Image (cartoon, rainbow, N blue to C red; front, side, top):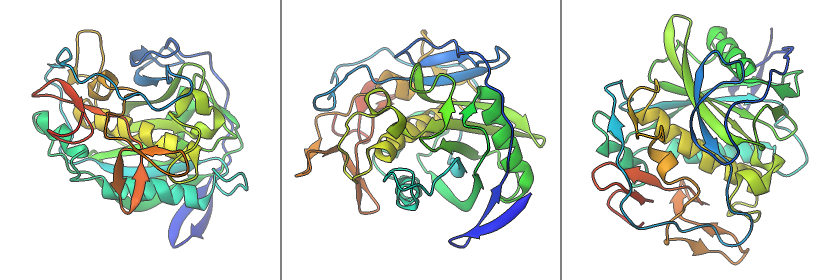
Length: 313
């Protein structure tokens, strides 16, 4: 194992061989509970963008069917851990340190915002969220990954000790660069979340790929607020997965009769509070001085999709 320091953060480079398993069972465009691509476990996938071109979809202001509390645990105040996989030092304008900084800005500032406070309407979730200052980098030799490879990447990161002690309150995000292929990504879904026992701890983790690989499938717009359509699109999916991990971390808490979780109910809708920038990009919220277009979330006590608690639909 080769250790190095990146901007004061410990990182690890692991050359891990990976074998591509079969395609995931998720259907294109659909969100919800699916078997992973090994058939051995469950994941909650976030389907592709069903709309190609034009302004981002505002979405309905009506009342939707409610979620059901299945009695499983929720996460009161989840902490995000970033696991960067692939080459995030490219000259393509997307897989760059500045792109990584956008993810940090969003996740580091999202806790307590009206947007994330929507989750507080689900019993036991405070709406708080934070970002760990510890990160893990795996430059990886594999350019095509399976679901089981994602679990291995998370396991390596947790066992390295570079992210601190295994955190049962954490959500570990595997964020892949756009030159890395992932079975199901772009063709069937844009990200997913699940959990596993790792190092004796119930670890919640998520996969999200850089949408620059397939902007028409995994981003709502090809011109973005921060001039990085791939990472801006990725952040919207990260937000979706974080919301769902908070309210259904072990896939046995909040979801409806069809298997849809809170963010699934509002997937790929952005409300009417979109602001158009001179660049042609839209945004719906500002975090840490940066503008983002982020998918809405379902508020439990109204069964409506919002961009902020009791706020704009």
